[in-house]
Image 1 (cartoon, helix red, strand yellow):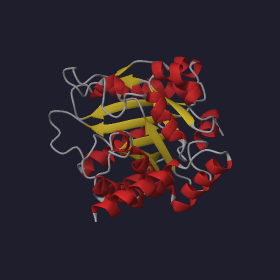
Image 2 (tube, rainbow, N blue to C red):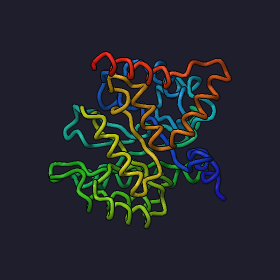
Image 3 (cartoon, rainbow, N blue to C red):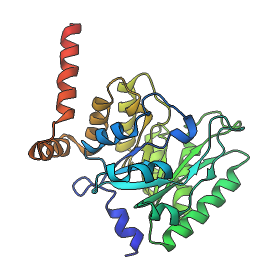
Length: 286
């Protein structure tokens, strides 16, 4: 077993074998994004749930590492680019694995957008990071998606399946991709991948119920967890949205076990409070 394998095992829940990763790295791309302005508050929210990984940029990692629970993987996002760039899907390396380790990261992440004029550079960056990280015993999460002027459908099954294959072929330990909606082909690509696959969320969607159904379908097709940020933290009730995602991934029993552990420590069960508040709103609406 390599050092990266030992660390990687911590990313997956010991009961379910699945992972919930909370990406809080959107500030580089979006700036002051509504719902993600206050990182300490979001870190506190995430800490109340059985979440296995939190993704941060290097500055946030340096400032807030103490707020990341010790049993949660701190994942350093090494890639970035702003929405003001031309084109906005270009990504460059902002941090090295060595710097991420110095800041306290347990894992590193790299972004690759394929099917565009900068694909070759991003693939080269990913290859270099995989080599560097594995040389230091650090696991790698590759977030791969089709983005570019020639991409007509960003969830085209053939493109998503190619993203899954790329992660494995270039040595990532875990690959994060959007769900294509084609359970059969997605499942075949996941089954053929040596890297485990997480489903990513993308931009916030107005219909959370249908989004949750999509997540369930992706898990049913073979994904081993989620890497979802904006669809949780920009939800009108982010606590309830997080509770629902965790329940989909790990099941109600694990969620209740985590709530019981918090109660034993004298911490309020925010998920139960959120559910009660939601029920009260529904009753008032009736």
